Image (cartoon, rainbow, N blue to C red; front, side):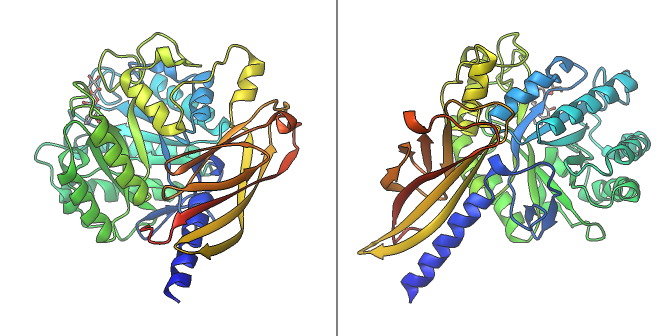
Length: 434
Ligand code: IDC
């Protein structure tokens, strides 16, 4: 009986794993918050993973369509548009408001075109207390939320990182006023609220119970923030707070210094286990270790264009170490999995000795207007897996991922067509802890 329950549980976890699979998550799906979890319109948990721009006033050049397309091909499903409010070029200081808003408009347009979520980030930093520019914030979010009320892929982040002596009570007061303005125009889209101490003190939150679809942000930099902050985060989640990591880096909190891969991976492991969304800082080639680029390339990046943070990010997002060559349009169509809908389905399960076995069938649909002449897909599981058998593909297991690529006879998928009959059997230890 216990075994049966465990195997049903495992079955559910695998299903959950696939249904929450980010590559098939459509940005057109309206999100909402259920308990601590971000869910899609069918109530299925969703994890957003992506990258934040640097300040759009300083690095506007990365808001270009080809760049967003490139990021989408890395499995990015959310882009954060960071608009500083107070620093030089800031929205509330000497920034050109119309130029900044038109960059946001372009960013939302490109993200939408490539079916990604997009966060409009009111990036307070040196201003410390969000109330300092509350009048401008209300006017800005009034205009923006009127514009995007019917676009379910838009998320509003109303104060990046409150800091200094600002308390949760002061942030809450700010949030209540700004959210009330947004909610008059847009009843549903997700709103992210920053927390005290550079969005780390999630233990101080008294939730904004009068509004729906609110999440609270936690930010970390793996070189500085470690197990202690993860413990704080875990406690907050356990107490029922919906958290969203709208900014993290894998270097020091000053955005520079050595990167800490071990801590970075600890964080990713923890956030995946808790189904928390996370967005890396930053999409630029500034000479600082948090920037993911080191060349002047503005899209179609190669491995050589990436900084160490960028290489880690690409590998974390795609499970590949090297970016496939995009020499010509034809190659690009063939190497990206963007346009493929991958549908794995468990068709049988059984137990033998101390192992559980699961048989899957996979279909791959080509949604692009072009034929695919090769394909390469990755399926994530919640635990390390062992492959027992596989057919109609070349299979490779890497920890909890199963990679499958075409054989010669099924490399070709015409536009709009579905490839069937790919399948595999995997097994896991029955003492597996999920
Ligand atoms: C940093 C940028 C740096 C810029 C500075 C402005 O990386 O190039 O000069 O802001 O003050 C944050 C902030 C984010 C910071 C980042 C790194 O949200 O704006 O960016 N960081 O310091 N919180 C923790 C770290």
